[in-house]
Image (cartoon, rainbow, N blue to C red; front, side, top):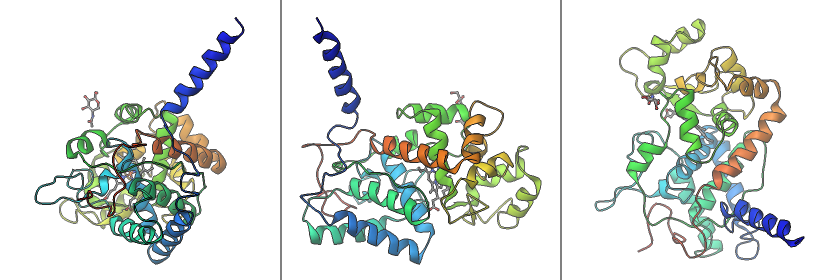
Length: 316
Ligand code: HEM
Ligand SMILES: *[C@@H]1O[C@H](CO)[C@@H](O)[C@H](O)[C@H]1NC(C)=O
């Protein structure tokens, strides 16, 4: 009877790993040993020429993973006969970096034909972007395959809008098996990058839980009407450094988006925000852990999907 506990332990281990079926950090070690170096070199060059590109690549991986899993679906461009995700409200006129991924894919294809998926390139590029801007590193699990479909509807339903409050955000992340701690940590990606005025206008003109001088300064480039696409940094303190200043901003009521400030507004996430604000190491560890979890959302593996030759279109 001693074998019964052993068997249940085995079953538990098998269940725990089922969510990340077959993904492995060494997936391309034999089949494409230069892949990781090619991606890292190209990401570093892109970030050197425009630091914001690191932010854009991190966001692209998020927008991939939340819509039917990390399967490169966000990269599929619309055609006359194909409606993808790029025209969905959370993506339209907003996602960037697809050209950088296309360029990396061309280089990786030259090294190893039809071996490395676009979904994996996105996951590695997100990690390399964070590292290039001074953030933590983590081993990226690999072996995702690319979708042959995309869903504009699922992009609109599953990607949280900046109007969400804490409860709505919690639900949106729980739907992807991510905890409140994961959600607060992943929101820390807003230590990088920029937002358009149209996403924070209502906050700076109509909300009460905002620092007055901060709101006043933002109004100069984001008028009541017009200037919809004028940019402001999501982390007003250190826009191009991956650090924990985002959380100190929230404590000072300097969150740019309504959804940012919702994390520190007297609710159940306040303590997590304070712990990330007071310890960069705590934040870095939580962020790396949550990025691995996000990267494990519904991967296509084995014979599912395909390895695209060009990231913007399904193989013909
Ligand atoms: C918690 C819910 C989230 C909401 C409501 C949200 C919303 C937004 C919005 C409205 C923008 C500005 C887009 C624009 O102006 O074009 C933005 C930018 C950005 N988001 Fe989020 N986001 C969320 C979570 C995340 C997560 C989980 C990540 C990655 C792990 C992420 C990474 C980024 C980055 C890096 C940018 C800047 C992109 C750039 O400058 O190109 N966001 N987000
Ligand atoms: C948040 O969720 C509640 C209840 O589920 C819903 O009534 C409300 O409209 C949502 N808020 C936003 C901004 O979508």
